[in-house]
Image (cartoon, rainbow, N blue to C red):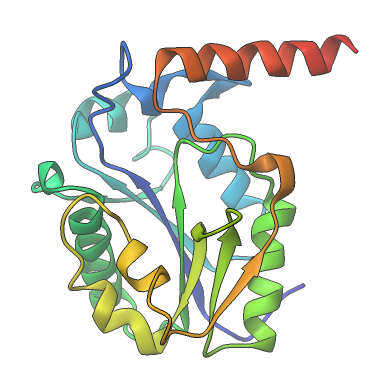
Length: 208
């Protein structure tokens, strides 16, 4: 489903993955790694453009993934140590300078490898129906990313700080939020054990 709304995706991949051995963005997954598979997933959606926010190991990740050769727009946050919120704010500011007429920004993480392009498309389909609302992912008692933010919240996204990402906006009961269910596609990988569990789960699925 194509839409007249101009929607961009920010893939957040700026963190240092301190709880894992190695660089999380480059952990082997499918045919390549977490970051490249996330990029591939987004490229299969109906989104107008995608942008990757890097910080820790930015140059190494860019080179390893050959992002320049692939014409992937990279936004580097030199203050990535200030947390995910700061990286989101930085990414949104740069994005709006490039494309001030954007209608919506879909924020994704590079460490949710089970998400499908169909689910991301469903967020956009819902946004077309409700372009003043946040379309977020249902985590049970809370909502989170991937989440699609409307134009009226761009300014607030630009003021985010700390390591809580967009939680401040997503937890604000004054904001109109529509939660969508991603079912078993939501898996965050922050530790070596979680990564190994993911690999085992995937292998078990393939063998059944």
